[in-house]
Picture (cartoon, rainbow, N blue to C red):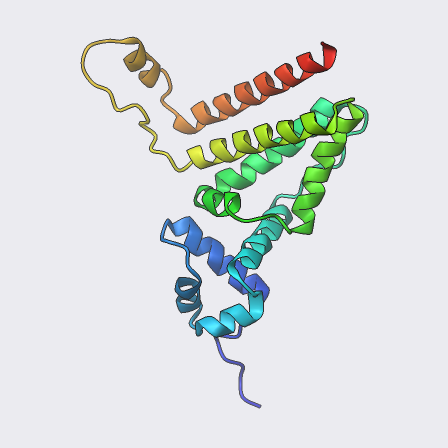
Length: 201
């Protein structure tokens, strides 16, 4: 029996190559991915269906690569913080993926389970469904936005000249990654403080 073709496809290989293509910053397209895999586009579609399904397979991979922590019982805020930190790490590891995620409906079971945990934590804290939907949108937008920030240039505010407040702020951080980390922690605390205040009102 001859050896299998080096282009033998598997879901794992397709997802790995898709992430590599996305991380490269090149435009993500199914034909470009098929070319990278060394196969015809119909063969790729045969294995993964359509692009939306592939994006959800990538979502599955993100969860597998960085599993969420065990559920924290009895403290809705700690439960939510732990999940949002996990989401942000995944987005930050693949910032060019963010726009694909935003534009693709979620069907990934592991990801839906994560959102169910968030919704349940809010529900157990006494929030109403309409409030919960808003809070999920806010936290999702925040985590995605900070993840996308990882692809920004380190010199965000390119300013020269006389000393101004913006020049001073721009030069106050020599480590852009640490600045984004601090922004994430501050923003997450501020959002959850605001939500907690509404619970007490």
